[in-house]
Length: 428
Image (cartoon, rainbow, N blue to C red; front, top):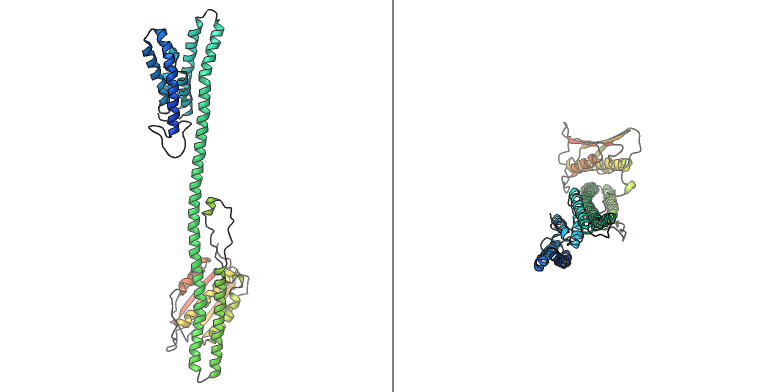
């Protein structure tokens, strides 16, 4: 069983054979060298006691001591060798290192306990047999000395190995938890970036709708008045002057709204604190949509003036208001205003000369607006009023985004109808 000892660590592998690190290999080879010297010296004594040639005793001791180099690869084999040579009174360092490595590695605890008990018993028996024959030593002293030697050579390395192994496993667990947390934070950062990108896209779409509403309506009215000025400039100079003044007013209003919108876009973002966490740095701040003009934007109170501008441009517009005025959120009132504004712009573009009816219904919990026009008058079309084809789409997005209902389509009389119902409290 290959294990990683307490000296191993780091992310890369730069050691030879089964060692993860070079210093671990150097340590094991050094321990093996010391163990070989110890066992070779003890092999001389063993050869003299058993009557075998000294060379064989030294060779046997050297081979036994060299087993230490396998302690990370085969800790069980190292402990078994230590137990086997205990009767020859050699391999003390071998036994200590083997028991320590066995207790520190991932070997099942029952195997560690079994081998520890076997080593304890072997040391006790060998010590007892070696000392019991001495006449000056009493039996109690022999038993006590044997027990002391068994405990001293078995318990400390096992306890130290268990402590180091538990500590290493705890550090690995903490590292795994840290890596898992890092991955989760990275995932959250990616999701936050996706949400921020979505918010930026929504903000660009919203600004595009605002620009369309402001420019399309005002410019359409300016084109209508400019055409009227051209038509009556010779016949009715007073009327031409009035239309020219209206064109100027429309242009100034459009510029004012555009300045407000651009002012919001140019507002600098607040500076971020210098001291921020590395992971938090990766999470972009979400883009919060800001309504140009804020609470001062157009609302239901401005419908009368809006309709008046179309009347001044020559359109026959009827405003039908029902229900008592109530307090609605600014975004709801602004959306209702923009729906009517865009619908009137479409009437100027696609149904010039048609009669238009603007209806506003207010009741508790919702606001309803409807703009219906009849068929256009033949020959009343005005040049220079291009259509981008996004008017109805923008109105639907506005209304649905607040949780309302939007319906548009032709009427049986040949006209067109736009209807929207908005909740008194916007969704979200």
